[in-house]
Image (cartoon, rainbow, N blue to C red; front, side, top):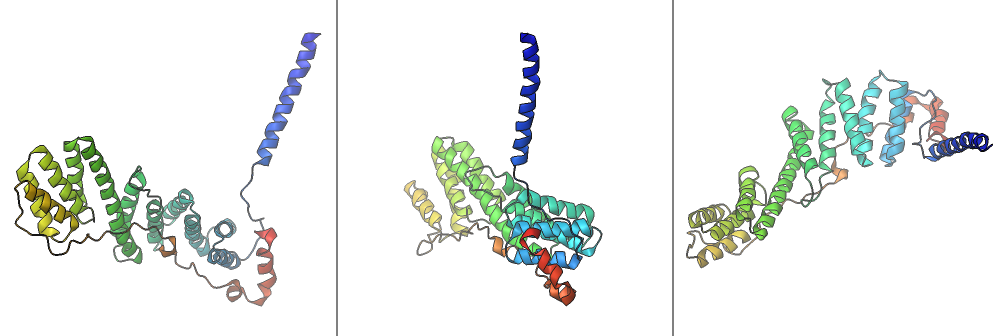
Length: 316
């Protein structure tokens, strides 16, 4: 009798568990999508552009997706991919934006708009750069992608923006080396610290961290008793940055050790120019055609009802 009851209980338990699992799956929120309704491609594209102008990024993505779905081989579909990439970027969905850019490059590698796809990928990596106290994997990816834009399209407006960002990325990487070098110096690992400061001088000598790196080398070499090396780095610092605050400190430090440099600090001490690291999405270049004409200019009065229907809450 017990076996009989147990054989009935198990199927019932399994059924209840399956029902709960299905209910749980049904309760997960789904990404809203437009109901399929065949609409003129110009209307879909212009409505998506309108949503972008209003910063309704997810709605813009939905309309551009409809352009691709309903008119996959049109010129509008090609443009919609880049618009989707830009909308995803503005929404902070960097992986999706990079995926859109890669999709465009795989479909239209020789297209003139490919320059923007490369630029969009670079900007996505750039905006994921974190402070120098954390891992700089995105920084390296950003630098590689930005250089790719400059090398492929050196005369484009995207290359001009990429060059500015490259300077900021190099400053960021130099800052990371300085952070590690200072840590080693405080920990008494002077030789490792010197390696980090030398890396700044060798790889990132045009950044704002160079004067401090030279000063830290003076400091480190004096700690190790390598007076000639300390004096040599002090001389380089004085020749290139005679008015920098770091040279003033180096001059005082070397003088206190009887190694007075030949170059005097240049007048009133001043701090070298530091390039601020700024990630401003409002200054990111938009894809060509981002500000498209409104649907009325494409379609005329007969399509006003269709436009109203597409823009209604039920259609978004």
